[in-house]
Image (cartoon, rainbow over all chains, first blue to last red; front, side):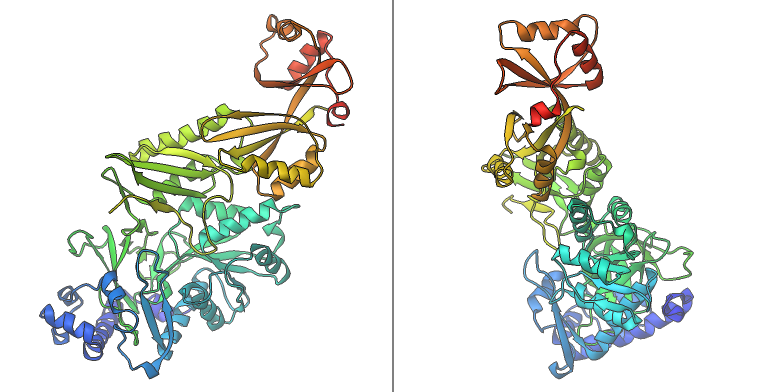
Length: 433
Length: 143
């Protein structure tokens, strides 16, 4: 544990710290940002009303749309001369959001990512290969600064060029990998296709921190098995700070949220009502110490659950489950709510099917048509048609029984589904809104 | 040693077969015979080539999903009723299940060659040899 005083704080002390910081953060937003001030005033809220943590509920939510509308600088609460960096979301579902950082914000972020690396067992002796994309995306620079902060040797290779990634893992003695889980699987695929195959077990690679997209336990097992490493889930949003918001510990059973700097609530996405701890719902973030872009009650659209339990790692910070999906990504197919991650888990259960898939939803008649395309790797390929037909039928049957939707399953050739070193294109929705 | 058939997964899309054939042509690999089994979305190309290991490596390198399957090649008289007599010869005493089969004509002789994929290749080989059929060797088929 990098910061035991904060990470294993008794709950009453944590609550006290959060309240003090919340008061500062809300007042800072109110006094130094016109958008927040207008929002608070319209809701009849003034920072003086904040006497307990429960008073947070009086403050209106900040939505993703508001963030987009205010881009690039509308939510900044410091003069531009104090801003040292900007990042921007990938903006896959509309306009991008923009986040700015003061020098202190970058320091905070570095500390949080250093905590993340330590939480996954990393330290100054590690050689950290950062294969997240560098640039406007927060993944690359976030992991980079965290790695330097903890004193690890950072290899800033960025995403892509898989051949080179493997070469560096071998020749530079990489011990820790940071990238998206789908890129890790991509790397494992690439390594297996090499002649002779690249054997991760003959390298010094021992652990990896994977995030920036939802992934499943089955994917974790696959990465761990194929690379011979421990794989840890890390979580963050560029709107909040980037990676470093929450991360798994050695228990690998949920991610500890860095509550000393981010206050989290779970709400019912339909009504906005705050739900008791342990309920599943949309997670809402409030930053407690950020300067440039304070986020006050930001609705993340991420669906998860929070729970507090005595963790063997000693951290008292609340744990969040793997994100079940973004409510943005949630597909409503013939009235059934479907998250792409559920489809992925199901494909992994059907033996040997690797999670290179794409869901295409279209509407030709009154009904939604769903097609699941699955790449056929050698592991699941048979020279007999009946075996191949049985495979697609089995997937379709599991989709019907587990998710309650009938889908056409199409087997496609490897490397035909669009993907990138960053995020995989899991869903194509061609229905007219 | 049995002969090696390469099986290739092909999506039913333009130029997929062409792509596979180009990979083989570029390596100067000769296809002795081939057959395609297909359903609406995809097909399985099965072929016997002169250099199966080299072809397999080249296809893998080109990201083509490909597997190797052991099959039996049986020399057969090129005459009416020959195939019937072959199948009939083992249908009575043994339950040998044929997954699929296809034929090609041998360049040197006056006989045909039938390629069989049996569920149990060793049992089939024994049964056919017992009946006096010639199982062709790797050297004869792959050349």
